[in-house]
Structures are given as structure tokens and as C-alpha cells.
Image (cartoon, rainbow, N blue to C red; front, side):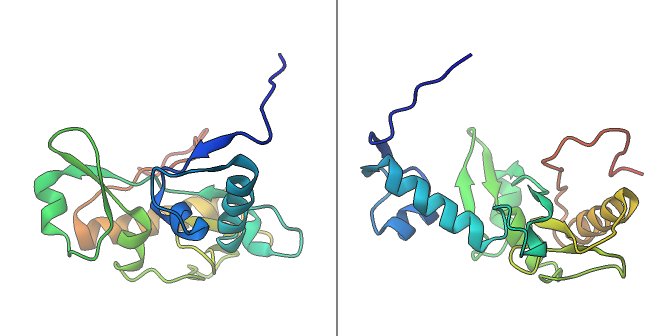
Length: 167
């Protein structure tokens, strides 16, 4: 299968963080090559672009998805928690905000080489020699900490094979 993608076509900017990086408003049309460069810069700053010199890039990227909660649950969160519209009666909230504000800091580890990225709390990284069990233990700890603080369940973004965060 072969895809042909135009390199110079304008694209609609739909994400607020990207719009800020491009100095445009959400909904603006911007040259696709410029959007690509900005997306890569944003992802690189979060350790989400593979770089052999940066151990924070040894990850699967974002480990938890932004949870969708009832509007009532979202209203119970502090106003500083970023939220996004979802289906009627539901709101998507920032998993990164929930993690950070539950007390999990960048670089956090349970003492193994698996750690929360020093650049972005959504990524779990391998600083060298971490086992799958180390990564799962850390993910479980992050999930349990968020559940205890906010009564919200985080779900993994990567597909877990042969293991579960449930036990």
C-alpha cells in the first residue's frame, strides 16, 4: 500500500498547545510543514521523540490516556485542572494534571530504573535495565496514587500483553 501526502498543504490547527506554539488561534490554517516542525518540537521537549542521547525518550510515550469523567466528577476537581468537552454529560480531564497534582513528580521512581520522565509525568521511562515488572509496578503506583487523591481511574494507553495493571 502506498500513500501520497502533500508536503505543502495547509492543515487546521485543532489543539490549543499547538496553536500557542504556532502563535495562531485554534481553527487556523497553517502550512503543514510548519505544523509538523512545531509538533516535533513540542514532542521533543516532552521526551517523546527518540533521541539516543536522552534517556527520557526510552518509553512508549504517554502511558495513561486522559480520562473521561462525568460532568459532576469534573466539576468536583479544582478549576486549574484542564478539561475538554466529550460526549454530552461527560468531560475529558488531563491525566498529566491529575498525576502531578496527586504528588507524583517528574523523575519519580520506586527505586528501580523505571521512572516517571523528567520532562513529562505521562511517560514512564527506562533509565537503564528496568524490567517489565518494574514498569508495571510504577504504573500501578501512579494509578493508585491518582485514584486515592481524585477518585479517578487512569487507564494505560499502550496495549499491555500478558500483564495487567489490575494485579
